[in-house]
Length: 277
Image: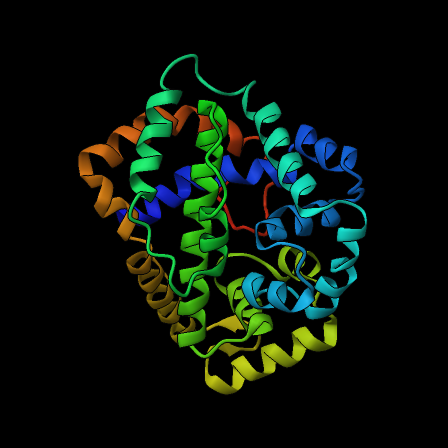
């Protein structure tokens, strides 16, 4: 597996607890963000400031505009971006503190800092916004922040790869559902109506990516191309860290990542694998 993809599978569960873990959701609710999606949109968008729906539709990409507009800008009347940022970090800390190993966090945090030290954020708005935030002083907070920064860096590149492939938000979901997920998981989680989803599937059928609703060889080949492009665009931090540093980070964080993965729902709209065992 490419090192950039391997590191994504390592870091994504550490980041994603902020959306799914009970303690993380409780932190958002305490900040005034009741309901899963208010916490999600406010917490993830907060590094951008009190933005409206437009920048979030663009950067989150796969969400239906109507779903985004139900949350934004309404959430900023319930919690400021600063309060949302504090809540997401507090919730992540509360969750990960019960999962983290006794040793190695400080070293892992330093390795993540090194990986991000020469991060190129040009054309990567979510990565750039998170890079502007201060690193938490505590090792656990720094590990979560580093995981978040690096996953948003990869995510921005993934959006670029999807655009190069000629996909819009709805098409990217209908295609992904056909190759390694399902409509039942992805459609409700991203807010597309049946009419919008079916129209996207029809466009994919016209392109030769779907046949009778099933992925074609062209669709699978496109997945491989998009993932390779995403990996290439995400490689910079791991080239900075080097193979030895990346392997050491993986060694240090695998227990925490595996424990975090077990807290997430399966299947999930992030298309993270089910934990082993």
